[in-house]
Image (cartoon, rainbow, N blue to C red):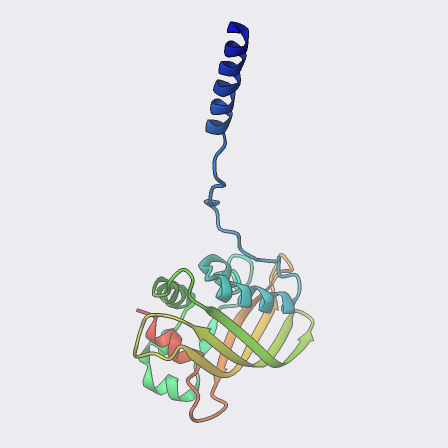
Length: 193
């Protein structure tokens, strides 16, 4: 009888120890994001879309020219109305891109929608330069009540290959397609400080 009690006690203790060793799955500390080495111009567009969707500043900035590997410098040309309305565009640089995107995602809830859709795309590539034109629809569920959350217009990106043969954006031109459109430039201007 003692042997049965001892065996039962061992089983209970073993079960208790085993259950203590089991834990719930932990949330990963590193975020999982999508970034593909941009070995062609179209992959830059994929990376740009995923950077917006995943709200990833590092991947967003990796879509732009890196002066360590290219002689080209970044330039942003806002739509004509925004160019007049927002003086910040007179000296827009990559640091402004980072500030804008960081501010935008800071003013979004973790589960808030952020997405960009490109339609009617054309991509023309010549040697180490490509021109990407498309209509865009951008949705950013931010918390600024005085700024539109849905933006649309036309985008022209000039891309180039650097010394590593990786492609990036070195010029971004934003256009209004209709007078009533609120463009990406408005979002950039309002989140750039």
